[in-house]
Every structure is written in C-alpha cells, then in structure tokens.
Image 1 (cartoon, rainbow, N blue to C red):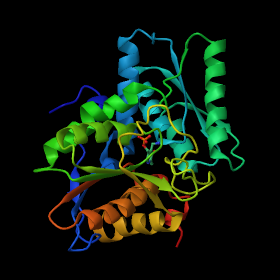
Image 2 (image 1 turned 135 degrees about the horizontal axis):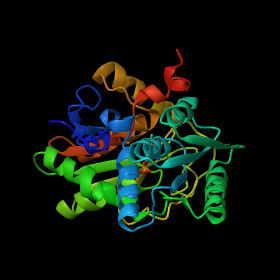
Image 3 (image 1 turned 90 degrees about the horizontal axis):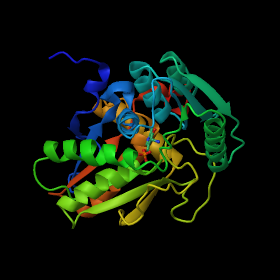
Image 4 (image 1 turned 135 degrees about the vertical axis):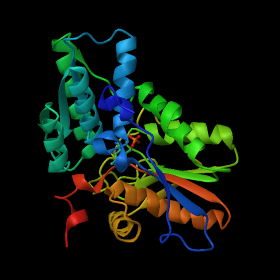
Length: 309
Ligand code: PMP
C-alpha cells in the first residue's frame, strides 16, 4: 500500500487497553493513542479537515497564506498540511508554549509569530486571534481557519476519530472523558458516542488552575493544549454530564506513569485525560468500558516539567 502523500496516512491510530493504571473493581480504560498520528498529535486530523473543507468552499487559492492562532499542536498540524499542499503558513503562538512546538512548526517550513503571555493565557490567545484577524484584513490572501469557532474542527472527530473508536471497541462504551482546548474533541467524539449509547457518561476535564467551565480561577498551568482560559464557541456544553478537575501534579504524574508502566510516550494533557478516566472508571465499576484520547506525543515536552528528573 503506497500513499500518494503523508496526508492520506492521517488517522487510524491504535486503541490500547491500560493494564496497570486502573483498579480491578473499575471499568476497563481504553486510550486512543494519537502520538502515533501523522504529525504526532490528534490536531493533524482537524488541520487537514479544516483546510480540505476551506478548499471545497473556495476559500483558498494557490497563493493563500494560512494564518492561525494556536497554543501548539494545531499549528504543527497546519504547518504540515500547508507544507504538503503548498500553502505558506504563519502560526501565532503565546510565548509560554514549549520551545519544541515552535521548532516543529518552523521545521515544516512555516513561520512563527510569538505573542507575550503575561500570565493570562485567555487574553494572550485572544491577542493571537486579533493579530491573525488583523493580518486577514490587511491581506486578502490570508485565510484564518479559526479552530475555536470552525465547525470543521469538530467534524474531523465526528467523521473520523469517533467512527474509528466505534469500529475499534467491541461492545458498548459507557464513559468518555476529555480535556478541552477548542472543545472539538469532546464535542465531536462525545456527540457520536452518545448517539450510539445515550446512557453513557461524558466528563469534561479541566486543569485546577484554569477551571473556567466550573467558574473557577483562570491562570497559568502546565497542562498544555487545554484550559486556555476561554469558553470556545464550538464547545457544546450540553455534551458533558459532569466536569472533573485535575491538578498539574496529578496530570504530570499520570503522564509519567503512562510511559513507565504502559510504554505510552504521551504529553501532559494525556495524563490529565487518564486521571479523569481512572475516576470515571471507578465510578462506573467493573464490566464497563471507558474511553479517552492521548492527544499527543511526549517528544514535544523535553523542555517542560515532564522531563525533569
Ligand atoms: N491536548 C493537547 C496536547 C492539545 O494540543 C489539544 C488541542 N488544543 C487538546 C488536548 C484539546 O483538544 P481540543 O482542541 O479538541 O479540545
């Protein structure tokens, strides 16, 4: 089997049972391992779908410049898709995201513009967006996918990630949980899984220091990719039944355990998701099945506390 381009290889990531993390009296936990996705994260799926749909809608020409504000993985995904499809790409990022993310974006040939994060990540992300929208106003060739409000972000999960999960899991899925960046993952996967099993339980997961959905504090935290301090437009707040809050230490410890005990090299927000999955699995009990995603690879966290001795 030969792919015409790397883009055809996006998706079809493995679903893996955790063997050492949950108690015996808990539900089985299955994780979708997006570290093995093209581009090393779940966000390559959304980058590809948003760009393909924009092409179909006539929003892109061969000279278009993709400009997107992002805290990381979406930028890497768009830089990759832009490289293959031949679009110039400019990614606008808070300077608080890991150095690896910037380097990866540049390595795909895209440009990075940094915006200073003074500790209020929500207003920094908004400033990144305003910068992108200003650029679009000044140059008609600029196309801003706007992942936080673009329904084709969610649709990547409805049409692909969720269908893969349903095909991979034998029998009913009783629980699903996910942290929220744009909300595309929880809204897209949640919608499709709940249609299949309306009695299932879905948990949104929030960092303790950025628990905006719970009306909590908005501050800096290390669970990169989620808890951006805004309530995204595409997040369907009716999709989750409850909210689970995780601390930085819990997420970090779990991400380390996933590598050491399960061989799963994943990022900090993967730890976040599994901390919540363990609690949900305990609540649902033995004989049930809980699914979550591991959104990205650990290899973009060398400069973060994940790799501190
Ligand atoms: N974890 C990581 C590492 C991410 O990059 C993202 C995307 N921002 C998420 C989780 C959350 O995904 P979503 O944007 O679909 O809510």
